[in-house]
Image (cartoon, rainbow, N blue to C red; front, side, top):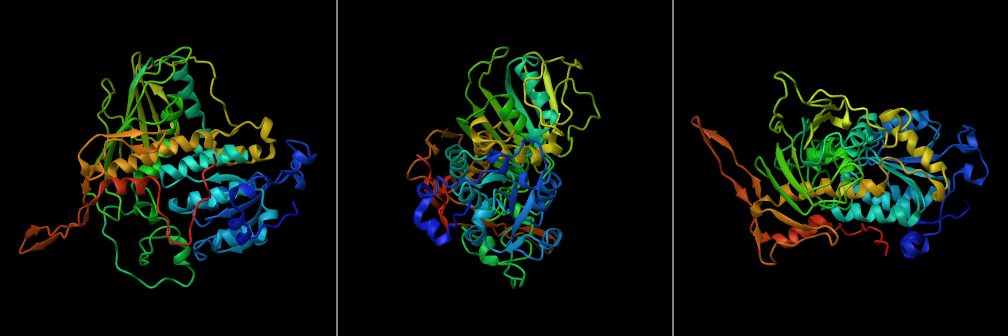
Length: 494
């Protein structure tokens, strides 16, 4: 593609003006599907390449992707990846990368902090690029809805980085549910052993910013606050401005077989509770309950209303009746327990090692799509989809058409935790992305810090709280963020 689109030109033109700019993989232009000739390589740009992004790029390179550009706000953290791909051009700012290399990029791998996933991914799709975005897909409900619609509008290949969605475990869980092996399911309990990073903390004191970190670009659309080494790299997961806590991190793995197997959509009710909730940081432990309405019945099983409950931070659900003593349900980071009218199904994180509590081993037909290599083939399956024409493309197992609505479920749990001070079950209008039972004059206040100290052996608390603020305005900002000046999402497609 010979067109060069500058960032200034892109912002001026907007989504409509560049809707037709699409990079076509070489096999669409006459190559042979399945061959590994250099002309069939997908040119991949990585944004956020120092942690999980480094591993995804290695997986893509192993499947013959051509890594052409690398972008990271922390060049010290990213140096190992920079050195691994010396021919890839390096950038600090993804916008400058698109400005300079738009014509050379087919697909973008996004593994930045949660709060910038939507910015990078939406820009890439609007420029006609295929997108692989790490989990959680976005930081907010609106951002998830936006990426879902953009992917459909621009007909690009997409994949969320919840690799278990490509694994045989998730496929087996779906097969058993869809074949009626468990019966109708009205309750699912899930949990994770996370967090394994700091949570439940007040905002740390300011420190000097290292020369190798562009703090302004890391903060991006969030409110500018001082740097501290505890905030990044990686530990940003526990801080509300940048991450979504243990729920956002692990629910995309553990809840995927729940969402897919039960054909879930938008919840109608949600409630959350936790250890002490602070303004800046996710709590040490949480519980969230979501209620989903009845869905259309499948051929062999009904889909009644179902309650899905999530636990983290060391909290676990009640042990299923009949489960032998001594069995640890935590399998690779967590588990899901499906209570059906015929049987109880238990699986680990990523849907691993599913089994029925009765001990029966179903001989169900294979109904869910399998990916070669299972979860190890997750990135390769994305590259496969990039090479296929949109009209005949086989969607990936975590295409944004599913990952977007699924991620709305995940970040809805975050909303419930942050709004728990309203002391109510929240009613949710998913279609219109709004709570229907938060009044315009309701107030909320949240703890800033607990002020814990010990004086003469006696524990004391000097808790400080925010001034009461408008709860509906706060909820609406969590649903659709007000970005910092200089940062803006593309428009929602009609």
